[in-house]
Length: 506
Image 1 (cartoon, helix red, strand yellow):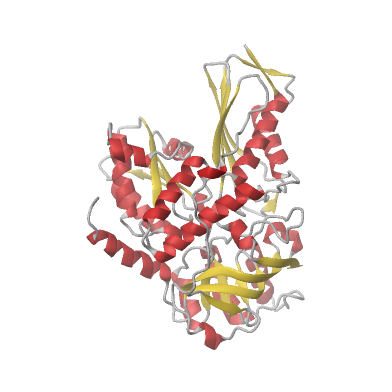
Image 2: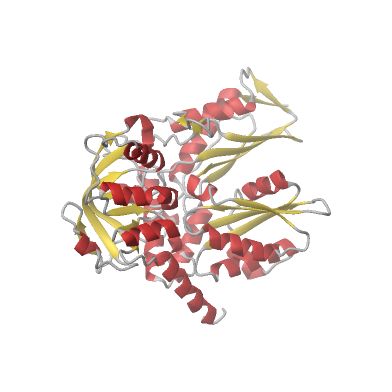
């Protein structure tokens, strides 16, 4: 019988969460490097270069890959021959103790993103607990843990449907991927669960994302069973959609498709899909009573020799003197380097602002959007001599319902976020001759390097959702929707889908 100390389990969870916050899995780095080498779309290649550069910087600086350090999901398999030494907590409590310790580590503070009372006040719990924990009692004398930190942008794109037995899974997945847009920060991987019941299919999809990327090997040797054949078919057809990195149009949308299945009722075909973003974070470890789990760091030589540099065609823009006449000349796909003062705000701040405006109240002192740009971001707290922690963009579509009010009543000129905008927001942008820019999701630490100062100017009680004023220098962004309402997320993928269609098959 194996004896495992409660503290060893807690420390292992904390160490694992720190480790995956700044080290990508090696298989992910290799797959991303391969995607970079074969990419032909300049915009997509630039985005992948930023992601790879960010990954190396995070490994060197031991700081989060993404500002959204995720909701923790743990699959814990406990051997029936395991005995716990002086345990005063149950498994879920131990996992949460590890999450609390890992996220509050002063050397690498991780952003607390979890809110309680999800249908009501949505108050931040302050330490990223509770985690989502799945516990299974199995044969054996070890504790097996698979743990992930799942970002909200990709998790929000999860979907589940009860198909009819004769419905086509490939057709359904392709439709879902096109509806997912770019908010899940491609390129990444897809987890698909088939069978069981509704909740089982979703759980299978999430478990599938814990597996390593092996699509190149699979394609080389060929499928050996129907599920492998389905994986290859979906991989090829999804990439043929031309969505590309960050939805800009390109050759690689997914680096792998993982599928787990389970027997189901004769009348049912449950199917679920969950994407993993460019901030893929997961790890597997076992405890056998010998102490805390060990996590060897990757070799620096495992990272490709890719360093992002701004394009020579990039336009330098001073946010403090920008005019509407200037932004009217910008075209979708243009690369911009922003310098000057930039206000921030995301979901909770937008709601509070719009509620204040509806009541006829003035906005707080220091919150003047007239002629200015807003950045949709919730940064990680700074450590040591940092101005701010990693500060990558959040998904802009969540702000779509506020866009008309913000543009019409505050004088806001432009917005910076990630992924596409919906029809309502694009109509408002065109109506008010505004502009929407995107920063690369998955390059949060690289973006933070462009921030020279940061201060909270309003709504400090909202924590990471407070309004900050950033002073930025040469912050890289791309024009996603210009003042005429033209969207790169519509133009880019459509053009690359056609190019891929006529490319010779390799």
